[in-house]
Length: 129
Image (cartoon, rainbow, N blue to C red; front, top):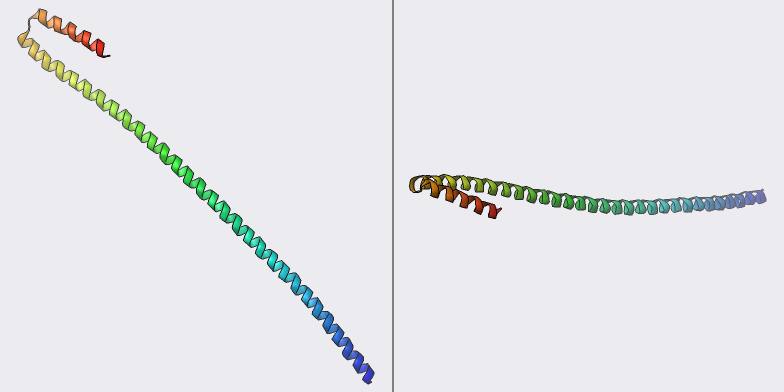
């Protein structure tokens, strides 16, 4: 009976040792899986950060490009408005000068002098163009 009890104890010890080895193997396997998951998570985070930075740079570049285009459009519009305003001012000044000159001419010039001044004006206007 003592021998039988001793064999049972040895069997239990061997069984416990085997189960301990199996548990350690399972633990090592899970630790490896956890480490793999951590590595994968770090890779995903690094990739997401990289993609985010690239997107940020693209957005900034697009915004700068759009701002430059808007500035160019605004400059072109300003130039068009400036040219239009100058043309209007020139036209208005021409009208006023002609009216003022007409009043002076009507009062002081003979019809022949009047005709000569008109011809001179036409020649000068042609030279300005």
